[in-house]
Length: 258
Image (cartoon, rainbow, N blue to C red; front, side, top):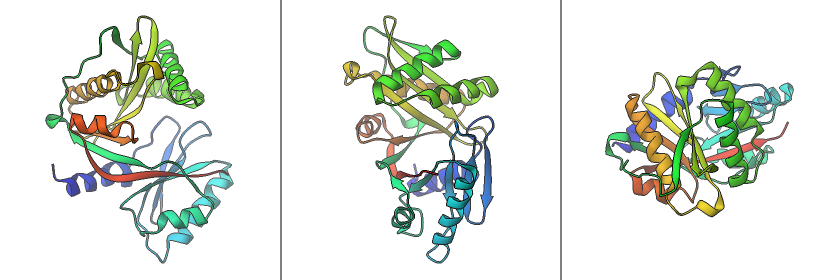
C-alpha cells in the first residue's frame, strides 16, 4: 500500500468531497473550507481545509461566526498534515478546546488478518432496529461513561433513511451486551470507516474488540470496499496494528462551544 497515495485518496474522497453523515445534514464549501451543518443532534464541524498562513485566521473567525450564529457547538477536525503547520495553535488561540489526539489508521482489506473470532461465551448480534440500537447505546454509556442519546438518535435515523450505509453490531455474553461498534460505508468511495468500538471494563483484554473489527471488515469486503479506516485511540492502535492497519497521520478534534 502506497501510504502517501492512500492518504491523498482519503483526503479527497472522505474530506474534500465528503457526503453528509446523516439525514438532515448538508455539506457546504465556502472558500478553502468544507464543513458539515446539521441540527443540534447531528455532527457540526469542519471536514477539510485548504488554507495558508495568510488566510487561516480569517477562515477560523468566519466559521466561528457562522456556527455561533446558528447556535451550534462545532468541531474542527484537524489532521496532522493540514496546513498551515501551526493551525492547531491558531485554533486554540481562537477559543477552541483540543480533545485527545488519535491516529488515522488505514488498512487494505485484502492484506488484513481477519480470522479473529469472538471469545468463548460471546455471540455477535447485528443491530438493525430500535432494540439493537438501544443495546449499542447502553454499551457505549457503560464503556465510555458518557451520554449516548445523540448516538441513539443518529443511528436510528441513519438505519431508517439509508440502511446500506451503516452496520452496527453488539457482542452479547448470554443476554448481557458487553461490547458494540458500528461501521460507516461511504458510497462511491473505496473506504469503510470503523467507529465507536467500546467494551465494558470487565470484558476488556479478551479479544472482543478484535473480533468486532474483523467482523465489520469482512462485511465491508463482501460489499466491495477496498480500505478500512479508523481514528484509533492509544488503546486500540496496538490491536489494529496486529490486524495489519498502518498509521498514516494524526487527527485531533478541536471543539468550540457556541
